[in-house]
Image (cartoon, rainbow, N blue to C red):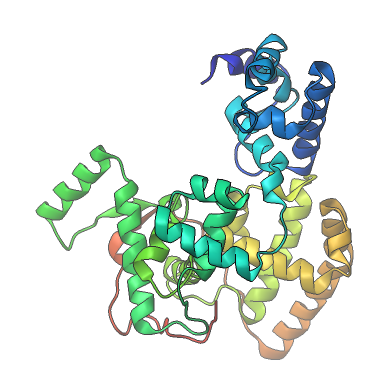
Length: 366
Protein backbone atom coordinates (compact mmCIF):
# COMPACT_ATOMS: atom_id res chain seq x y z
CA UNK A 1 0.00 0.00 0.00
CA UNK A 2 1.26 3.49 -0.86
CA UNK A 3 1.70 5.92 2.02
CA UNK A 4 -0.70 8.36 0.33
CA UNK A 5 -3.44 5.72 0.35
CA UNK A 6 -3.40 5.12 4.10
CA UNK A 7 -5.31 8.25 5.13
CA UNK A 8 -7.73 7.96 2.21
CA UNK A 9 -8.50 4.31 2.99
CA UNK A 10 -9.20 5.16 6.64
CA UNK A 11 -11.69 7.82 5.55
CA UNK A 12 -13.44 5.44 3.16
CA UNK A 13 -13.60 2.78 5.88
CA UNK A 14 -15.17 5.26 8.31
CA UNK A 15 -17.78 6.06 5.65
CA UNK A 16 -18.49 2.35 5.11
CA UNK A 17 -17.17 2.51 1.54
CA UNK A 18 -15.32 -0.58 0.26
CA UNK A 19 -12.10 -0.22 -1.74
CA UNK A 20 -12.77 -1.12 -5.36
CA UNK A 21 -10.75 -2.84 -8.08
CA UNK A 22 -11.53 -3.84 -11.65
CA UNK A 23 -13.13 -1.60 -14.28
CA UNK A 24 -13.96 2.00 -13.45
CA UNK A 25 -17.63 2.96 -13.37
CA UNK A 26 -19.09 5.92 -15.26
CA UNK A 27 -19.42 7.77 -11.95
CA UNK A 28 -15.75 7.16 -11.11
CA UNK A 29 -14.63 8.30 -14.57
CA UNK A 30 -16.58 11.55 -14.17
CA UNK A 31 -15.09 12.12 -10.70
CA UNK A 32 -11.60 11.50 -12.06
CA UNK A 33 -12.17 13.91 -14.93
CA UNK A 34 -13.36 16.52 -12.42
CA UNK A 35 -10.31 15.93 -10.18
CA UNK A 36 -7.91 16.42 -13.10
CA UNK A 37 -9.62 19.60 -14.30
CA UNK A 38 -9.66 21.03 -10.76
CA UNK A 39 -5.96 20.30 -10.35
CA UNK A 40 -5.18 22.00 -13.66
CA UNK A 41 -7.11 25.09 -12.55
CA UNK A 42 -5.41 25.07 -9.16
CA UNK A 43 -1.86 24.86 -10.52
CA UNK A 44 -2.13 26.64 -13.85
CA UNK A 45 -0.69 23.64 -15.71
CA UNK A 46 -1.81 24.04 -19.30
CA UNK A 47 -3.40 20.66 -20.03
CA UNK A 48 -3.81 17.07 -18.85
CA UNK A 49 -1.13 15.78 -21.21
CA UNK A 50 1.49 17.94 -19.51
CA UNK A 51 0.20 16.89 -16.10
CA UNK A 52 0.16 13.15 -16.76
CA UNK A 53 2.89 12.80 -19.39
CA UNK A 54 5.40 15.29 -18.02
CA UNK A 55 8.35 13.49 -19.68
CA UNK A 56 7.03 14.64 -23.06
CA UNK A 57 7.83 18.22 -22.08
CA UNK A 58 11.47 18.24 -20.88
CA UNK A 59 11.74 22.04 -20.81
CA UNK A 60 8.79 22.33 -18.40
CA UNK A 61 9.33 19.10 -16.48
CA UNK A 62 10.93 20.57 -13.33
CA UNK A 63 8.28 23.30 -12.97
CA UNK A 64 5.39 20.85 -13.44
CA UNK A 65 6.95 18.34 -11.02
CA UNK A 66 7.33 21.06 -8.36
CA UNK A 67 3.67 22.09 -8.78
CA UNK A 68 2.50 18.47 -8.49
CA UNK A 69 4.47 18.05 -5.28
CA UNK A 70 3.40 21.41 -3.83
CA UNK A 71 -0.33 20.82 -4.37
CA UNK A 72 -0.37 17.10 -3.38
CA UNK A 73 -1.15 15.68 -6.83
CA UNK A 74 -1.58 12.10 -5.59
CA UNK A 75 -4.17 13.01 -2.96
CA UNK A 76 -6.03 15.40 -5.22
CA UNK A 77 -6.38 13.04 -8.19
CA UNK A 78 -7.81 10.27 -5.99
CA UNK A 79 -10.38 12.47 -4.23
CA UNK A 80 -13.74 10.70 -3.94
CA UNK A 81 -12.51 7.53 -5.68
CA UNK A 82 -12.24 4.48 -3.40
CA UNK A 83 -9.28 2.87 -5.17
CA UNK A 84 -5.52 2.68 -4.65
CA UNK A 85 -3.83 5.87 -5.88
CA UNK A 86 -1.75 3.99 -8.47
CA UNK A 87 -4.85 2.55 -10.16
CA UNK A 88 -6.44 6.00 -10.29
CA UNK A 89 -3.26 7.38 -11.84
CA UNK A 90 -3.10 4.63 -14.49
CA UNK A 91 -6.75 5.22 -15.36
CA UNK A 92 -6.16 8.97 -15.70
CA UNK A 93 -3.22 8.37 -18.03
CA UNK A 94 -5.35 6.15 -20.23
CA UNK A 95 -8.29 8.57 -20.27
CA UNK A 96 -6.24 11.67 -21.08
CA UNK A 97 -3.56 10.21 -23.36
CA UNK A 98 -3.88 12.22 -26.58
CA UNK A 99 -2.31 9.29 -28.43
CA UNK A 100 -5.29 7.08 -27.54
CA UNK A 101 -7.66 8.95 -29.81
CA UNK A 102 -5.98 9.06 -33.20
CA UNK A 103 -8.74 7.31 -35.14
CA UNK A 104 -8.35 4.46 -37.61
CA UNK A 105 -4.94 3.23 -38.74
CA UNK A 106 -4.15 4.09 -42.38
CA UNK A 107 -2.31 1.64 -44.65
CA UNK A 108 0.78 3.77 -44.16
CA UNK A 109 0.42 3.57 -40.36
CA UNK A 110 0.18 -0.21 -40.49
CA UNK A 111 3.23 -0.52 -42.74
CA UNK A 112 5.24 1.66 -40.34
CA UNK A 113 4.06 -0.49 -37.45
CA UNK A 114 5.33 -3.64 -39.16
CA UNK A 115 8.70 -2.02 -39.94
CA UNK A 116 9.20 -0.70 -36.41
CA UNK A 117 8.26 -4.08 -34.95
CA UNK A 118 10.87 -5.79 -37.10
CA UNK A 119 13.44 -3.33 -35.69
CA UNK A 120 12.35 -3.14 -32.04
CA UNK A 121 10.41 -6.34 -31.38
CA UNK A 122 7.73 -6.07 -28.70
CA UNK A 123 8.97 -2.79 -27.23
CA UNK A 124 5.49 -1.29 -27.59
CA UNK A 125 6.32 1.82 -25.57
CA UNK A 126 9.11 2.76 -27.98
CA UNK A 127 7.03 1.88 -31.06
CA UNK A 128 4.07 3.85 -29.66
CA UNK A 129 6.24 6.94 -29.31
CA UNK A 130 7.50 6.56 -32.88
CA UNK A 131 4.00 6.48 -34.37
CA UNK A 132 2.38 8.81 -31.79
CA UNK A 133 0.03 6.13 -30.47
CA UNK A 134 -0.35 4.55 -27.05
CA UNK A 135 1.63 1.38 -26.34
CA UNK A 136 -1.64 -0.55 -25.84
CA UNK A 137 -3.02 0.66 -29.17
CA UNK A 138 0.02 -0.43 -31.19
CA UNK A 139 0.23 -3.79 -29.39
CA UNK A 140 -3.41 -4.61 -30.13
CA UNK A 141 -3.22 -3.41 -33.73
CA UNK A 142 -0.07 -5.45 -34.43
CA UNK A 143 -1.86 -8.49 -33.00
CA UNK A 144 -4.43 -8.06 -35.76
CA UNK A 145 -2.09 -7.34 -38.67
CA UNK A 146 1.26 -8.89 -37.70
CA UNK A 147 0.74 -12.12 -39.59
CA UNK A 148 -2.17 -13.86 -41.35
CA UNK A 149 -4.82 -15.25 -39.00
CA UNK A 150 -7.44 -17.91 -39.66
CA UNK A 151 -11.14 -17.13 -39.42
CA UNK A 152 -14.24 -19.24 -39.04
CA UNK A 153 -14.45 -22.65 -37.37
CA UNK A 154 -11.43 -23.81 -35.38
CA UNK A 155 -9.66 -26.96 -36.55
CA UNK A 156 -9.03 -29.79 -34.10
CA UNK A 157 -5.29 -29.02 -34.20
CA UNK A 158 -5.86 -25.34 -33.37
CA UNK A 159 -8.17 -26.21 -30.51
CA UNK A 160 -5.67 -28.63 -28.98
CA UNK A 161 -2.88 -26.04 -29.34
CA UNK A 162 -5.08 -23.49 -27.56
CA UNK A 163 -5.80 -25.81 -24.63
CA UNK A 164 -2.10 -26.63 -24.30
CA UNK A 165 -1.16 -22.95 -24.57
CA UNK A 166 -3.58 -21.85 -21.85
CA UNK A 167 -2.36 -24.62 -19.56
CA UNK A 168 1.28 -23.59 -20.08
CA UNK A 169 0.56 -19.90 -19.49
CA UNK A 170 -1.38 -20.65 -16.30
CA UNK A 171 1.40 -22.89 -14.96
CA UNK A 172 4.02 -20.27 -15.86
CA UNK A 173 2.19 -17.66 -13.80
CA UNK A 174 2.07 -19.80 -10.65
CA UNK A 175 4.34 -18.90 -7.76
CA UNK A 176 7.48 -21.02 -7.09
CA UNK A 177 5.71 -22.55 -4.08
CA UNK A 178 2.66 -23.49 -6.18
CA UNK A 179 4.86 -24.97 -8.93
CA UNK A 180 6.83 -26.99 -6.39
CA UNK A 181 3.58 -28.38 -5.04
CA UNK A 182 2.43 -29.24 -8.58
CA UNK A 183 5.73 -31.02 -9.34
CA UNK A 184 5.51 -32.97 -6.09
CA UNK A 185 1.98 -34.17 -6.79
CA UNK A 186 2.81 -35.12 -10.36
CA UNK A 187 5.79 -37.19 -9.23
CA UNK A 188 3.74 -38.96 -6.57
CA UNK A 189 0.82 -39.67 -8.87
CA UNK A 190 1.09 -38.48 -12.50
CA UNK A 191 -2.50 -39.45 -13.25
CA UNK A 192 -3.83 -38.26 -9.91
CA UNK A 193 -5.99 -35.48 -8.61
CA UNK A 194 -3.99 -32.35 -9.42
CA UNK A 195 -6.41 -29.45 -8.91
CA UNK A 196 -6.74 -25.76 -9.77
CA UNK A 197 -8.78 -22.92 -8.26
CA UNK A 198 -11.56 -21.86 -10.65
CA UNK A 199 -10.58 -18.22 -11.06
CA UNK A 200 -7.10 -19.20 -12.33
CA UNK A 201 -8.87 -20.75 -15.32
CA UNK A 202 -9.93 -17.35 -16.67
CA UNK A 203 -8.35 -14.53 -14.62
CA UNK A 204 -4.93 -13.01 -15.28
CA UNK A 205 -4.18 -15.07 -18.39
CA UNK A 206 -1.75 -13.38 -20.80
CA UNK A 207 -3.66 -13.72 -24.07
CA UNK A 208 -0.76 -12.21 -25.99
CA UNK A 209 1.36 -15.19 -24.85
CA UNK A 210 -1.45 -17.61 -25.73
CA UNK A 211 -1.74 -16.04 -29.19
CA UNK A 212 1.99 -16.49 -29.78
CA UNK A 213 1.75 -20.20 -28.91
CA UNK A 214 -1.37 -20.85 -31.01
CA UNK A 215 0.08 -18.87 -33.98
CA UNK A 216 -2.96 -19.05 -36.27
CA UNK A 217 -5.43 -16.93 -34.22
CA UNK A 218 -5.28 -13.51 -32.59
CA UNK A 219 -5.67 -13.01 -28.85
CA UNK A 220 -9.36 -12.04 -29.07
CA UNK A 221 -10.21 -15.23 -30.95
CA UNK A 222 -8.20 -17.27 -28.43
CA UNK A 223 -9.97 -15.71 -25.46
CA UNK A 224 -13.43 -16.19 -26.98
CA UNK A 225 -12.72 -19.83 -27.94
CA UNK A 226 -11.31 -20.61 -24.49
CA UNK A 227 -14.50 -19.28 -22.86
CA UNK A 228 -16.50 -21.64 -25.08
CA UNK A 229 -14.30 -24.65 -24.27
CA UNK A 230 -14.10 -23.85 -20.56
CA UNK A 231 -17.87 -23.47 -20.27
CA UNK A 232 -18.42 -26.92 -21.79
CA UNK A 233 -15.90 -28.53 -19.46
CA UNK A 234 -16.99 -26.74 -16.30
CA UNK A 235 -20.58 -27.83 -16.98
CA UNK A 236 -19.61 -31.36 -18.12
CA UNK A 237 -21.27 -30.64 -21.47
CA UNK A 238 -24.71 -29.82 -20.03
CA UNK A 239 -26.98 -27.63 -22.17
CA UNK A 240 -27.25 -24.85 -19.63
CA UNK A 241 -28.44 -22.32 -22.22
CA UNK A 242 -30.72 -24.16 -24.61
CA UNK A 243 -34.49 -24.62 -24.88
CA UNK A 244 -36.39 -24.19 -21.61
CA UNK A 245 -33.10 -23.95 -19.72
CA UNK A 246 -32.15 -20.89 -21.76
CA UNK A 247 -35.48 -19.24 -21.02
CA UNK A 248 -35.14 -19.93 -17.30
CA UNK A 249 -31.54 -18.69 -17.34
CA UNK A 250 -32.63 -15.41 -18.94
CA UNK A 251 -35.36 -15.04 -16.31
CA UNK A 252 -32.88 -15.72 -13.50
CA UNK A 253 -30.39 -13.28 -14.96
CA UNK A 254 -32.89 -10.42 -15.28
CA UNK A 255 -34.26 -10.98 -11.78
CA UNK A 256 -30.78 -11.07 -10.24
CA UNK A 257 -29.68 -7.92 -12.09
CA UNK A 258 -32.82 -6.13 -10.92
CA UNK A 259 -32.15 -7.20 -7.32
CA UNK A 260 -28.53 -5.94 -7.19
CA UNK A 261 -29.75 -2.43 -8.09
CA UNK A 262 -26.48 -0.87 -9.27
CA UNK A 263 -25.90 2.26 -11.34
CA UNK A 264 -23.26 0.92 -13.69
CA UNK A 265 -22.38 -2.40 -15.31
CA UNK A 266 -18.85 -2.17 -13.88
CA UNK A 267 -20.30 -2.45 -10.37
CA UNK A 268 -21.67 -5.94 -11.06
CA UNK A 269 -19.97 -8.96 -9.51
CA UNK A 270 -20.17 -11.22 -12.56
CA UNK A 271 -18.50 -14.01 -10.62
CA UNK A 272 -21.42 -14.08 -8.20
CA UNK A 273 -23.99 -13.57 -10.96
CA UNK A 274 -22.72 -16.62 -12.86
CA UNK A 275 -24.73 -18.84 -10.49
CA UNK A 276 -27.91 -17.54 -12.17
CA UNK A 277 -26.97 -19.75 -15.13
CA UNK A 278 -24.84 -22.43 -13.50
CA UNK A 279 -21.22 -23.43 -13.10
CA UNK A 280 -19.91 -21.15 -15.85
CA UNK A 281 -17.15 -18.53 -16.20
CA UNK A 282 -18.20 -14.89 -15.60
CA UNK A 283 -17.33 -13.89 -19.18
CA UNK A 284 -19.96 -16.36 -20.40
CA UNK A 285 -22.64 -14.57 -18.36
CA UNK A 286 -21.45 -11.18 -19.61
CA UNK A 287 -21.80 -12.39 -23.21
CA UNK A 288 -25.34 -13.66 -22.58
CA UNK A 289 -26.33 -10.38 -20.92
CA UNK A 290 -24.99 -8.40 -23.88
CA UNK A 291 -27.02 -10.50 -26.34
CA UNK A 292 -30.08 -10.17 -24.10
CA UNK A 293 -30.03 -6.37 -24.01
CA UNK A 294 -29.05 -6.07 -27.69
CA UNK A 295 -31.98 -8.23 -28.84
CA UNK A 296 -34.66 -7.17 -26.33
CA UNK A 297 -34.08 -3.50 -25.49
CA UNK A 298 -34.80 -0.95 -28.26
CA UNK A 299 -32.09 1.73 -28.61
CA UNK A 300 -30.21 0.24 -25.65
CA UNK A 301 -27.08 2.20 -26.60
CA UNK A 302 -28.86 5.42 -25.67
CA UNK A 303 -30.14 4.13 -22.32
CA UNK A 304 -28.44 4.15 -18.92
CA UNK A 305 -27.74 0.81 -17.26
CA UNK A 306 -30.66 1.19 -14.76
CA UNK A 307 -32.99 2.03 -17.68
CA UNK A 308 -31.90 -1.13 -19.52
CA UNK A 309 -32.52 -3.28 -16.44
CA UNK A 310 -35.90 -1.65 -15.79
CA UNK A 311 -36.98 -2.35 -19.38
CA UNK A 312 -35.86 -5.97 -19.17
CA UNK A 313 -37.64 -6.44 -15.84
CA UNK A 314 -40.89 -4.67 -16.71
CA UNK A 315 -41.29 -5.61 -20.37
CA UNK A 316 -39.09 -8.58 -21.32
CA UNK A 317 -39.39 -10.65 -18.13
CA UNK A 318 -43.21 -11.18 -18.29
CA UNK A 319 -42.90 -12.25 -21.95
CA UNK A 320 -40.15 -14.74 -21.12
CA UNK A 321 -42.17 -16.22 -18.25
CA UNK A 322 -45.21 -16.61 -20.47
CA UNK A 323 -43.15 -18.22 -23.21
CA UNK A 324 -41.54 -20.61 -20.71
CA UNK A 325 -44.90 -21.66 -19.28
CA UNK A 326 -46.34 -22.42 -22.73
CA UNK A 327 -43.22 -24.32 -23.81
CA UNK A 328 -43.27 -26.49 -20.70
CA UNK A 329 -46.97 -27.29 -21.12
CA UNK A 330 -46.43 -28.24 -24.75
CA UNK A 331 -43.23 -30.26 -24.37
CA UNK A 332 -43.53 -31.46 -20.77
CA UNK A 333 -39.82 -30.75 -20.31
CA UNK A 334 -38.23 -30.33 -16.91
CA UNK A 335 -35.93 -27.42 -16.13
CA UNK A 336 -32.47 -28.23 -14.88
CA UNK A 337 -31.57 -26.37 -11.70
CA UNK A 338 -28.40 -24.27 -12.16
CA UNK A 339 -25.41 -26.13 -10.76
CA UNK A 340 -23.65 -24.44 -7.84
CA UNK A 341 -20.26 -23.05 -8.92
CA UNK A 342 -17.35 -25.27 -7.85
CA UNK A 343 -14.34 -23.49 -6.43
CA UNK A 344 -11.80 -26.15 -7.46
CA UNK A 345 -11.45 -28.29 -10.60
CA UNK A 346 -9.22 -31.20 -11.48
CA UNK A 347 -6.60 -30.42 -14.10
CA UNK A 348 -7.50 -33.57 -16.00
CA UNK A 349 -11.15 -32.44 -16.28
CA UNK A 350 -10.20 -29.14 -17.92
CA UNK A 351 -6.99 -29.66 -19.89
CA UNK A 352 -7.51 -32.99 -21.67
CA UNK A 353 -6.75 -32.96 -25.40
CA UNK A 354 -7.91 -36.33 -26.74
CA UNK A 355 -9.17 -36.43 -30.33
CA UNK A 356 -12.79 -37.12 -29.46
CA UNK A 357 -13.02 -34.74 -26.49
CA UNK A 358 -16.19 -32.79 -27.30
CA UNK A 359 -16.31 -31.85 -30.94
CA UNK A 360 -14.55 -28.54 -30.47
CA UNK A 361 -13.99 -28.41 -34.20
CA UNK A 362 -17.60 -27.37 -33.97
CA UNK A 363 -19.59 -24.81 -35.72
CA UNK A 364 -18.99 -21.78 -33.53
CA UNK A 365 -16.94 -19.04 -35.11
CA UNK A 366 -14.67 -16.47 -33.57
